Image 1 (cartoon, one colour):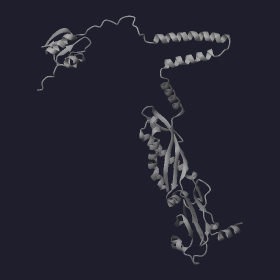
Image 2 (cartoon, one colour):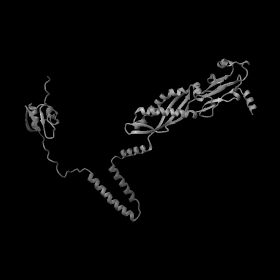
Image 3 (cartoon, one colour):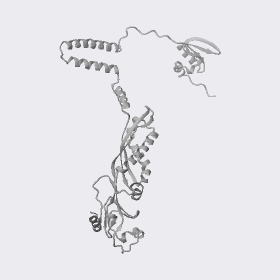
Image 4 (cartoon, helix red, strand yellow):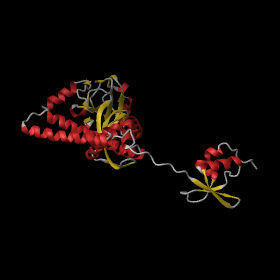
Length: 365
């Protein structure tokens, strides 16, 4: 069997890769003993890049196109190797194909809740998940830092490392942002764009480019969500007393429509008394349009004033207004009435504002 593989490897002179999967990032073209026939045709399709590796060193780099592996289009390999047979015998090398397309719908999410302090709810635990897309932009860096000598490299082989990197940066950003928990949903796009910008340099070290990161959901623990739902329900219900009356009326109507014999009649009678009681209570709680007794007789407030160092009064408010107009009392005159803790200037008493509105202020200087 080994003989036929060797013989087949000697005569096959077409090197190409057609990918039927959706997650293969790097593929090494398999040859028997890594022998490539001199003059073999290398086909690199669109969205692909090929690297020729000889004796562990990168020899040539191929963009999309059709190439014949011979001296004139392998200048780097020519300087690395000495060919005693006029460059016509098979040579040992490896061809790596890189899938340069965009890899989409890669998942990320928090394994454990993120602890943070919210301005409204206090300490909170949040979970988040979303998707991101990447592509290879530096094949040489990718093969050196990530792929190594592997012959078949998929997105699953690096997704865990990238996911941990994203979650770490997300936790740091969400903690520093100070965005209230109830406002996070309005900032998904901004968070995704900012995280993409923050992690781009770290992805670049691996030879990858992060194209887009989406935050699909940020959720609270189930217990907090239940409490929040109750709080929202109370806000929708509004008046709890009216809601209780409505619930009682609905229960009474349902019992009345259930013809179950004598028990139903007894329940209906009890419900009738309950309805009457609730109706009377509601009517008693409504404000009455007629007053049974007149309001109390208003009492006028009297004031004492300090004029020329002597206490005078008590004066009614109308008398005070007359003295303001005559100039006996000005804004700096001290006044006092029952309920005041101390003497105050007349200009600081709200009841005298109408009187002082017609009196000009003192002359400047």
